[in-house]
Picture (cartoon, rainbow over the protein chains, first blue to last red):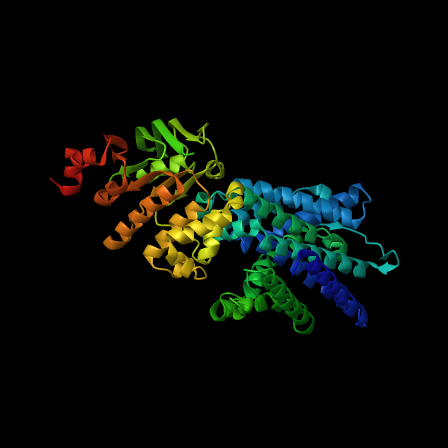
Length: 306
Length: 243
């Protein structure tokens, strides 16, 4: 399918999702749906770097929280509309992505992963000690009741839905373009890719920028969603764990994998946290991950096709 | 149109370890030059320097391609490939999870190569009919000899003028080594290349080489201007024949 046709189909699917959520006579559908969509964006963004180029990023929480804290800062300084703040969050996290990439991409494999983990700790420490955005006490963001006649939570849901469409379309475009072939070459054998004239460093920087930027955009609406944000929740380890687990469970070789993984795992966690207990949701991730590594190492999409 | 390569006073190493000492050599237009030496003498290090994968500490590397001279030291690997210099790394380094055709198309990553992709692919399949038969097979599932053929063909897909080959014989049975060497010769004449080939297998390498250099402990120990001169050399006899 051609690019524009695919985007049209994605928009149609998004409209159906929104319509279905409106049909459910329970405002909680939008609260839960927002989180699932947020994970669709995060998992897709993670997969652009981790799945396509093979560089495993443990620092999702940092990129995500940087987007959220950009919103906190902008909320105090300006009265920009939320979509503009999301763009700003994307730019900040994308820039940090390039910076981290430039400093760490000469490291291969596990060493790169350790560096991203360290980066997350550094960023969290900086934010915790920055009192302007609330420091360790956290920050309150008062959200309006509605926007243009639309309930604000529904508005947040809609924004995240739009971002999910953008993220998926980006991932699929990369997959089908020459840049995607370059990413696959880096993943398969970086030395060989280099010997073939693939501009490895430049491609990896594009991947870290896009991946980090999308994560930042996903984090930007968070302060309006939770209305109270502190470093411990913004930088929660569960973001890093979930965004790695979702693509692995769904399958990393195509854009479909992270989406399936995020919808499946995200929904399961939301259901579990209302019906059983919220502490259980990370346990579910762990158990599923173990199960999938044993039974389906190439994820759910590995069961079909090549 | 062809290409030549000139290296002078090249020094390089890894950290405190110096591997190459004042290496000077030349690959003339349309020549096949063999870089001979046993393991650990610096052949691969020299190749990496030429390709910009390792930064030399001193010396110059100059390539003349289609009449233009380029200083290679300091350029990135992709810029060097872009000039028309292709590299077949030691141990083949294919993309094992991609098919034969996909591996070949990866070889044509540089912009100039994409224009000639169709013609080059046809040429590759003509020189290596085996690859045409297996075009849909995953590269990792082929035999060692076939993989070496694919590595050579992939390098050709970048439409090079100058081809560097690091140890084409490594891990291959004797019969396959001689077949690989024949194929290199066929590629070179069919495509009009200049070739620098690092090789341990002396007898096979000088079958197609116009000239050769023997590298010992990172220094050029002997430069032979013909295959005969290399054959008659006492140093080589002591190295390879233990006499």
